[in-house]
Length: 240
Ligand SMILES: Nc1ncnc2c1ncn2[C@@H]1O[C@H](COP(=O)(O)OP(=O)(O)OP(=O)(O)O)[C@@H](O)[C@H]1O
Image (cartoon, rainbow, N blue to C red; front, top):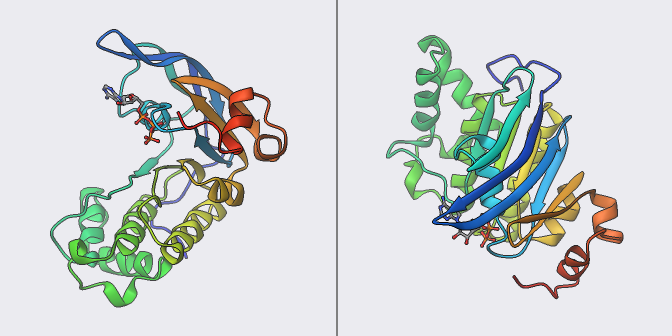
């Protein structure tokens, strides 16, 4: 089950240093300092509008902060991101994958075999020739994960990757996340689902109103959160 690019270890720490993001004078993320290290599964939690997606996009480099710095303490790792609604090409599932290999200059002779292997890894072999855009939500999400798999990322970001899925599809995506993690990929994900966070998290970053309230080991966050907002959130009392 080897992905086509060899991975480098250890993965550089990601350091956010006093990062803020403002829009039209409004503070959406304030003075956030955070280090993500090792091969951990970090889950970013918080109520609607807390700034979870924003933090993730800043961490992945999709948005520049208004102030502060986002930096890798070492070689910038290979990164991939999976969104709630994956953007897939108007082609077959297989061709979506061979396309990614082509733009990463993988020799043509290897592309189909590598793509088929990635489809098999995520249980999509029987759908290889189906147009990607007619796949179900869960299948599309697994295809997005198969596409990310081909990049052999050191760090995988997932933004609400299971929020539109039924329980079986959620399990399939969670299994896929575990497959990445077992292969040495650091996971950084947002979710609204407390049970999912309990299943997956090694550590929890908790945000409220654009402020980092705590970054705790999962065990601590779910049994004795350090922040009053974290306590209220896991008791279902903090809506936003
Ligand atoms: N690029 C942007 N420009 C302006 N405002 C933004 C931008 N990105 C996010 N926001 C705003 O920042 C706030 C936080 O948004 P974000 O999507 O990070 O919240 P969230 O915690 O992921 O919420 P949800 O749980 O509802 O998905 C929201 O009020 C949103 O409208």
